Length: 211
Image (cartoon, rainbow, N blue to C red; front, side, top):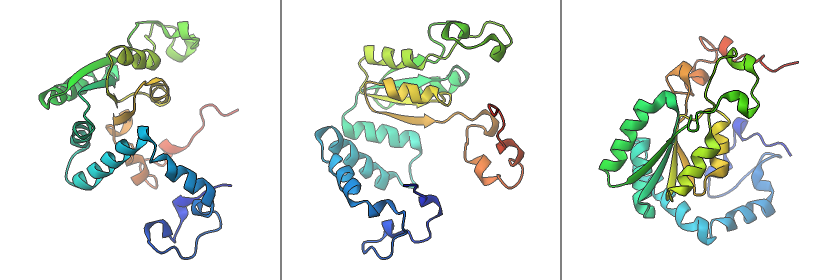
């Protein structure tokens, strides 16, 4: 089954009474819907989901995302936060950690280049970085060091596409993204969507990696 909620014009998921559903609406799969709903009542999920929903309501159009992260962490009883950040955003990471500490949290932070290993050591070809030494990003190590620090909740700040995925995979606790890196748009990824019919049209044409 291919789901296309992005083009749905019915949006019965937002109504109490469900009327006509598209043929490929996920809600037609009652077994999967019910099994997913049951997961929210598991001990490891229930409080986390309820508190995040409370923050959604309290902070909606009122709090910036960083405050939402802090308020959520307070509600969950998290004391020790992990910050996995990009070297290119170390100034922002320093200020973020400062704000977190000023709001009562202990913060452990790990930079993406930790280890200082050349990219070739991880099997990345020299041609990708012109044969010069370039330290590899190390998201798995970031996650493992934050586990060693015994953080309660982890925050990512500007990790690369894919590297962030590996960080989440190896994070020993739940994690959330504070900043999604996008150097072209000043770290505002939706800018290319808003401008997709104009200035960004050419920049969204793929080609790298095609045969």
